[in-house]
Image 1 (cartoon, helix red, strand yellow):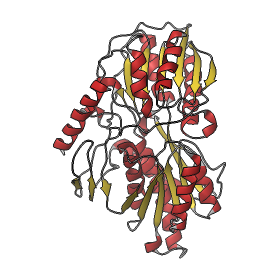
Image 2 (cartoon, helix red, strand yellow; image 1 turned 90 degrees about the vertical axis):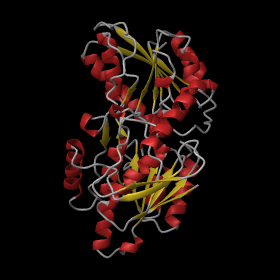
Image 3 (tube, helix red, strand yellow; image 1 turned 30 degrees about the vertical axis):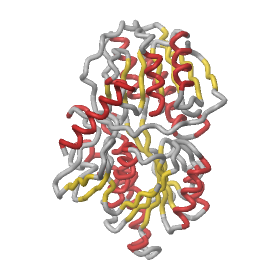
Image 4 (cartoon, helix red, strand yellow; image 1 turned 120 degrees about the vertical axis):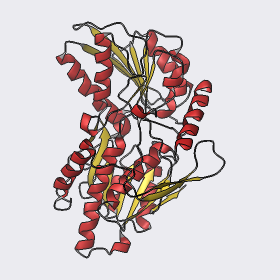
Length: 423
């Protein structure tokens, strides 16, 4: 295991070597290109960067944000808007006005570099890029603006770029996905107990963006949550080769329904998996946003990152003149990962109580998401052949272990038994 993680970090280091503000602007070409798979860890951020000049209460702080989509996706970028709005209120209570400029529908290409330059030239003191594939293009701009803090959300290479003004951040979303998996498991158990399905029909479908560690970590934690309630459950994953393609996501969800899946979940940006689930009379678990509004008879719950927690941390550092961590993460106990309100109209009886129990267990360490027993097989980044990871009873894999020297970005890439992964 240590050899595997050492290989991952070495490859990350190699990859790194190659590797103003009130309004909203939209790019007319939101085309997104495929990104390289992330390898990530979990920190509270102790790696010092150069101190920043303190921001005095009563001043206005200009902040720019570059987004892969826009708030109308009702998913990924919409969730960043929620974080923006929430932290604006929090900082106002501290006497600091946040003045935002958001540039939307920016692909993972040189358009991101141009957007970062525009924001820096416009006087933004912080520039946030919200998509994994934005990072290399953000780094092109960051070197020329050392007084501007650049943040790559859900990324990992900024911390290795040798630039004091570049930072990475993620949150332990696998915790929220595990809780959502428990909710799914409770519903499947109810269907079995009431004779609607038999245990061999306990099959979940999952719409994934890419076969990256971030996605694999997410669907594995979701599956393990469901399996903790229904040991017989299986899951099929279909990748759509895009973070945000509403049509492809809907088609993948339909194919999973046609294959007999009784519940659909997703790591993709749109609501079409939810609406397809509802149209087919199956259940759904969402991501980034409460999707009960579009699928009230299907969607049970969603998990999401509350980015306002990290944003507030960054702005507090600026207020105090303290360094911003090169890599940062936090989880459910910190409020950085949350689940939406349970859809009690369709959830199984006792689900809320079980959720509360699991959330408490995650907080006190009595529950570990990637606890064994399981066996996984996968190919590390750049490796020639697959490797196998065995986790025995009483053992667990520690994801996003920033404090342990890893990255905030997920690095779990093994496919465990019970899951079928299809390109």
